[in-house]
Image (cartoon, rainbow, N blue to C red; front, side):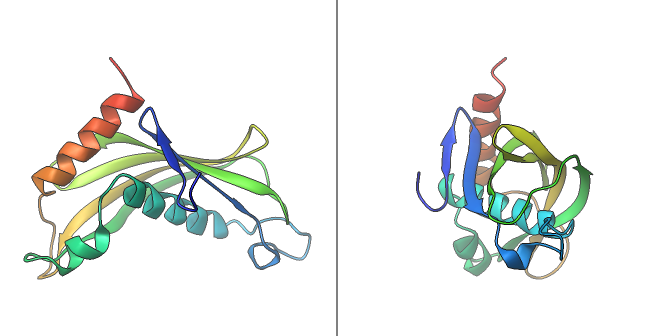
Length: 148
């Protein structure tokens, strides 16, 4: 596995250690830090999937992704020095949005889950349609993760 994780059957997985800076005084991951874990997972998911966010942002139309909505469920705590894995998969795609289901696990236990709606934004302001190449890549990943 690379530092950015791997994609198998449309599901991206990346693992990393919980550091002291991620925890509270009891050595338990502070709840807001799960948002950082999910962000790290999504960024690496796009990177491994071949979607270059830097190139998109610097392209002719300047496209950026922004979190529009997030539903998070905290189930069990992660602790200092745990190795956690963030799993990400495409759940839904629309004109300017993609919904990504994510979960953080440790030793087979689900610690937290999130459904994240990410919107494509134009550098000039406002929502914009996903480029066809990005939409196609998301569709391939969605189909691989949820074969019908």
